[in-house]
Each structure stands twice: as structure tokens, then as C-alpha cells.
Length: 521
Image (cartoon, rainbow, N blue to C red; front, side, top):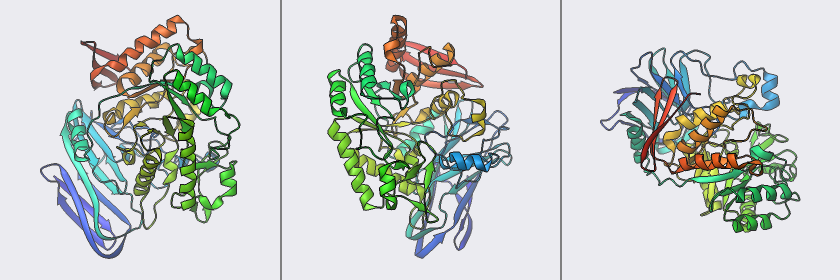
């Protein structure tokens, strides 16, 4: 198979062969410092009208699904600038450094993608993400364009520009091949069940209502389950230790442990909001773009990216995590991680910086559990125990109609389910997949009974993490029985997913019986 490529520095235009193992590797020895402006390669592919194209989105929340040939990928190209500027929608994804086409049949994503014909997969996957690998399927030309996110990177000496796997077969076969070449072995699946406070109380949490939730969970959950305190416990994002809302956190953690649960805490370690003391007192701690402090999003009072090359920032992070571990927490959910690496520099790509940030978090957490969120996925492989692989769920299935015109990271239960389905092959390899929460409750939730069932069952069968965010204290005996029945699915094994047009079939074994669950979105 031929792969044509061109490199813009001094200009190279060549073609190369993909070897018999399905690997194309392109190495250079730059004898002097060289600026690489761009790299692009192209491979022709065979497909038909029924072929499906999967592209992996930029980060945890980015919609990642299969597309039909004549579909159009959503972009922000037609969103008014005043909306973008107010809500910083372009900051959550790849919109500032990737050009989107509004043409039908062009689909792009990061690190890996595939073409599927029934149960036959043609996988294209990066084996070297020192710079992000952008894969762009153009179904109008039957050509896959491969770009590296270099943007004037300065290199010298040996440099691997591209290492790409191209292989075909059944789903398990091709993904096992990819992870084998990455030296990542499949881990025994250890499910993490439990409770998160977010979709129950959002930021309206305090010691009293968290203790109420804990007492209710004790009547339903099992030893070793997770009780996670989510966003809202802090005074301001960034001011993690200045906390008057929860002056008894250590005692709460003790109570969580006494009830036999793991204690989890939400943090966004690489950002601080505008109202925080950290932001106001240490403006030199933050990344700058064009001499201005870089704003990474509009949540809270807008939030800004800390610079992990600043030694004072590293000291601050050490203090934060030492504080968390001193409180006794077992797991941290680390959120909005993409913000640490928003742009390239002459010396380092976004991907290398993101990987370095993930390695830093692993060092700061030691043997404590990490649940990553809002992060590009490949840099997190083998560094996080669990990772969100989809967007936030919504309480009305596909969110408000006008939200459909916004970014690919928007909240949506329908999108979350697609992310869970199509990123399922990653589960138990690089990390355990976290599909976000499910709901059984009837109040404050507009999902239909069928939609709630699909969400709970799909999350149970295709994910490692299975959390609810209901008010467990409001569960009657029927709801408790429903929960416990669904929980049995976490013991399922030999799981195999089939996709037939718009019908999804999850085959599995449970208690010695072969079963299947069919559903539509």
C-alpha cells in the first residue's frame, strides 16, 4: 500500500510503502535546527455507500461517532462571533488550530479512526503522538489525509515524524493489534460503582446535604463503592485550600470510609477562575497568548490556564494535592485538563505538553486513583486509572434545540451514548472508560423510561465506571430493586457489540447464560 507525503521545511515530496506488518514509519535526522511548518500524507481507501467512518474527537467531551458518507460534520463556522467571544466555545475543542470543512463527506479526528463495513474494520491509528495526528477522511475522493500538529516546530537530530498502523479485521482484532504495538495490555476489568453529587445537587452542596447523601447511599451501595464530592465544594476554582463551605472535609472523608466507601473529590488542577485569589494574586502563573493571559473557557467566572513550566505553579500543585491526600481521599476526578496545553511552541507540541501534564498528575497522585476528564485521550493512556470518554449527559436527552448549533463538546445524553458506544474499544486498555452518570429518578429529569434504561444498561455493559447522580434518599423499594437488578450487568463478561444500521446489539454472558441487549438511539 502506498502512502504519499510532503513535509514543508525545506520541501520534501515523496512516497513510501506501508510494510507487511501494516506500519508506516517516517524518521528524519536533521543535522541542524530545522523548522517544520507542516506535514501531510495521504492514503487512498476503498469504500462503498454503506461504509461507516469513525473519527475520535479531540478530547473527552468531543463528539466521537461513526458518520455515513453523505453526512456533514458539525463546526463552529456559522456561529456568530459575539456568541463565540462571550461563551468561548472555540476554546473547548480543536477549533483554534484545525480548519473544519462544511462540505458533506469530510470527517476529521485525532489519533485513530476507522472505516467499518458490517463487522470488518480498517483501522488507522497513531503509534507516535509526540505531535497530534489529525486524520481526515474525504469520502468524495476516497482519500485519507494525515496531518501532524507541528505548527513551526523546531527540531534537530533524530525525529520520528510519523508512525502509523494500518490494519484490518474484526473490531477486537484490530484494536488488540494497536494496543499491543503501544505496549499496552488489557487489564482485568474492575468496575467502579457509586455516586457523584454533580447532577443531583450541582454546585449547591454543603456539609449537611453531602452527609445526607452519604447516609442514603449506605442503604443501597456496596463496600468499596465510590462516594464522590463533585464541583461546588470549593470557594473558587483554583482556591482549593481556602474552603469555608466544607471546614469538616476530613471528618466527612472519615465517615465515607467508616461506611466502607472510597472517597472521591473533584478538582480542576490546571485552571483557576477569574474570581479566585490565585488568579488575582499571581497573574504571572498563567499562560499568555499575544501578551494577554489565556482564557480557556467561560465556566464559572471565566477560567485561565496555569503554566506548568513555572516552578511556583508546580509548588502550588504539590501543596494542593498534599492537602487532598492529607484529608484522606482515595480518588480524584481531575477535570478541564485540556486547558493545560492549548497551543504549540517552537520547542514543544500540544501533544507532548499534554503528555507531560498527565505524567505530572500521575507523579502528584502516586498510587491514588485518577479519573481524568476533559482531556485528549491518547496522552492519558496508562497514566490514568479511569477516564471520561464522552460529554456530560443532559436531563432532557439531547439538550435544548439551540444547543445543537454550538460546539461538539456540548452536553447531551444522546451524544454521550454515542461516545460510549464508539469509544468502547478503548475500555480496560489505556484506562477504564467512564461514560458519565445514569439516572433512574422521576423528578428533575425529562428522560423517558426507555432512555433511562438505555443509558443505565449501556453504561453498565460498555464502561468500567458506573455512577449515578440521583437522590438515593428518594428511592422507594421499587427503585432500589431496579438499581440492584441493573447492577448485576456489571458482572457481565465476554461482551461483544454489533451495529446493524441504526440498531445496536450488545451481546454478553451473565451467570453462565448468553444474553443480548438491543436498542436504538
